[in-house]
Length: 244
Image (cartoon, rainbow, N blue to C red; front, top):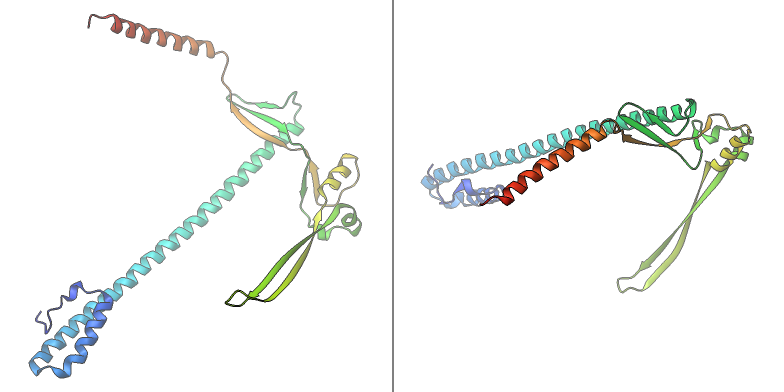
């Protein structure tokens, strides 16, 4: 395309295209009629190229927005999957704990064909609360609840640009929260006293699993390893004693 300038429009950035278009447009009255025709054609080419590059910005933004949306959806799916598997794991550990408490076991082991669970009693009884202590009977709140008070202090200092202290003040803030007294609930449970509605106290165990290695197959495995070792040693000794 014939141009009135020697500028390579394809190599200009969006900003440079805006600047070139403005400069060329301002110079139109100063050109001859023949040059004006060339300048108008160059203006049109500049405007088309500029519009194309502006659209490219939109396409790039849209692509990143789509990618972020997919990542967000994937993150939500991963989080849901994590919550699902954590819930299933907790239920299975609860099942093992229930077996330990309910089955007539002679020790702290639950043994399968290939795997074994070793259960270690936790130091403190587990307290499970399904009813908000705020909804407990007043007598139960008095006996089995405590108030937790948290005081935070904010120190505010206002200084001039030269560092002079213009104002200084302390703003304390206190929050109070009603909490269940777990120790009191455990003690009441142990001595057979009634505990609030929606509260369960039970012994939990830490669950550890391990692979069972059959003692019957162990000698055969050791024999096989010894035979392999002897065979390899014989090969090495033969090679070491060869004339080469």
